[in-house]
Image (cartoon, rainbow, N blue to C red; front, side):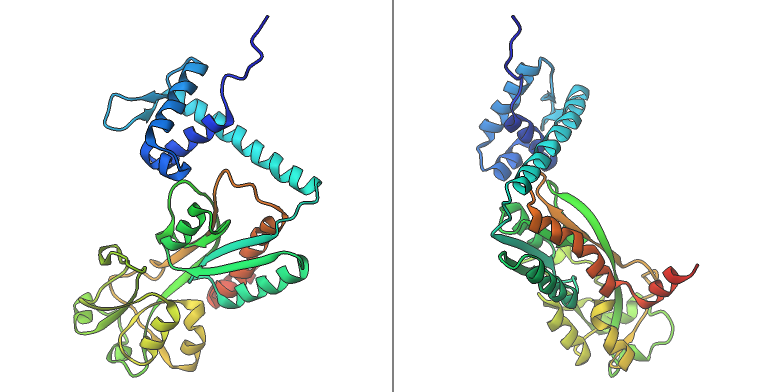
Length: 314
């Protein structure tokens, strides 16, 4: 008589995927709220059950063996199918989430977010919507902690261990107030010229200045939200990078002037926003609806006019 017991458990497969995504057993333990020894034990039990070595433990950190990479690929397929089954069963039972939780990066256009909420209220009148706006890695932290089910984040905030789907490009432009000395430059501005001027930089709360992106000036003023950054630049406090969709009206009105640092190419700062969620998080009808709307609404407001014209060409 053959043994009818499965040689592995779903928990072991999820632990394997978490260990690979997080880069170590200890990090996987933190993600799964377990001690490192529990992760190690789960991996040993899985290896014993399957009869193949999954991890090479000869180095400082365990690494997947060739057999381990094959098993990981199969494990991800199994886990994805299980998550799909949960969603199907949820739909069949008529169970719609009571609350939908979304956290978006401050780069996400506010008007698109408001329209999303309006459509959501009409489509799911009995589901509460929680929307939070954060900056960079604070978005993924909310998703990883479970405080948000879905996140929308730029490349600076991406972290391992999440499923990612790209949705829209954000063009960043260097701008200065019309009254700022930099506005008088007609040609690309050499990096040495920025030394005399303050740069307004968007930083994470408690963030390390060393992690700043695209800083050219030796003197910086740091803010944690885009409206404050826009207001400071318009007042002539300093210059800085802003999403094109946020400063589009001020550029058209002449309140702001686009400048061109010589160190940057024209398309150096086109950032991609992505939807992220936990790989083992079953998404109900309301959350799947939100994901279906995010791309079109975001692209509607963020694709800069020149690109819109280009897309309309036959």
